[in-house]
Image (cartoon, rainbow, N blue to C red; front, side):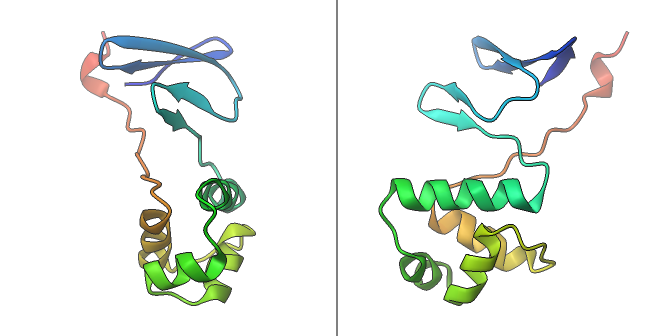
Length: 109
C-alpha cells in the first residue's frame, strides 16, 4: 500500500519498495510503469502514450474497444466524460489497467 514520506511516495510492490519523488510522472516497476491519474488530461496522455507505443491508430483502438474514433480522440485529449464504461474499454484495448489507491486504515497505530 502506498505511504507518503515527506516529498516522496513509497510503493510496496511484492518484495520491492519503490520510492518516488512527488510529484512524478511515471515509475518503472519491473515491466510495469506506475502513472498517477489525477485528471482526465493525465488519463488521456496515458492512453495516447500506450496507443502510440504499440503503433496503433485511433481507428484500431476504436474498433477494438467498440467505440467511435471521435470518442478515443476526445478521451486522449483529456475531455472530461461520464462515459466510464467506454473509457474502460479503451483502456483495455491499449492494455492499460487502472488501480485504485485506497488508504488502509487497519495499519494505523
